[in-house]
Amino acid sequence: MTENISVGTHSAGTGAVGSGSVGIVAPKIAHFNAPLTLKSGAVLPQFDLVYETYGTLNADKSNAVLICHALSGTHHVAGKHSEDDKYPGWWDNLVGPNKPLDTNHFFVIGVNNLGGCHGSTGAASINPATDRPWGSQFPVLTVEDWVKSQALLADYLGIQQLAAVIGGSLGGMQALQWTIAYPDRVRHALVIASAPNLTAQNMAFNEVARQAIITDPEFYGGDYYAHGVVPRRGLRIARMLGHITYLSDDAMGAKFGRVLKDGVKYSFDAEFEMESYLRYQGDKFAGEFDANTYLRMTRALDYYDPALAFEGDLSAALKHVKAKFLVVSFTSDWRFSPARSREIVKALLDNQCTVSYAEVTAAHGHDAFLMTGAQYHAILRSYLSNIEIGNNDAK
Image (cartoon, rainbow, N blue to C red; front, side, top):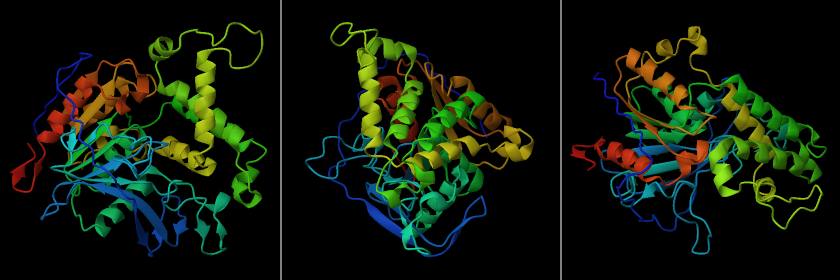
């Protein structure tokens, strides 16, 4: 295939971002009765996946796009669940009529990963063998397991081939794995702010976060459901630590600096604006996310390494990939740096795959993939508008 690399280095663009909304949406449940064997060898006797869809599946089912979420993401990608919802889906700035991922042309699928805490089967779900929550007995999951279950969801929807799989961060790893595990079932992969595996430093951050949860007195070895409690303190610290790594130093400085809330009090209260912000984020997260899910999501991040079976050779791991790629990185992202994205690009080019690469100047750090950057969205819009669907062009 033809090499096709484009590199963006400007912080702003002039392309207008569409403002159309998919409107009020409702989640759906796909139930699977057949056992699912996981990479670990554990078997789930049955499972549910909660998902949402936006747009219309065309007659030949060639316009389906799967969105893979990151660590704390959900199936709720766009729109609102009711008129009273304060916030829309987590990637609403990207998905909708006339937006970069245009639902006038594409049928978009958002799914809550297996092990999640927003409706899909996870540790808080009832184990049919005991009629009690799975808790600590719920298996450890991998990116490969998620992709395998997502392929079953595509089967459930009657979709044999996806026009594209898109994901940022951990979602980008899933998009990459789709092209490895199912090379004939995905035509395009958009891998954004991601990496082929975690660095040792990233794994260290995950371990500190997990230890904050595991050592919380109310964790009870993962069986806190039976005690009617939540390891809130551990979750709170884990989120605060994670949030620091998602932002760049410049973004933190611009947003908070060293600003005091009400002057120096010589105490350990939240005297600085940054402290207040982190505590707010930690409290909010602890009130809505499940600790067992957090443990499993971060562990899946640690385990993912497609090159491991090929003596560290990523090019060999991607030998059978057929999809075309858009790989996007952000200059201020130190957790998933541009160098990690370029590893993916090189491995794809080694296999003569078609790949476009954009390195976007952005100040937000890792969270830039969630933001509405004019240049960033212009890149996505341009790439997605050239994806062919059926006998027509998406433009």
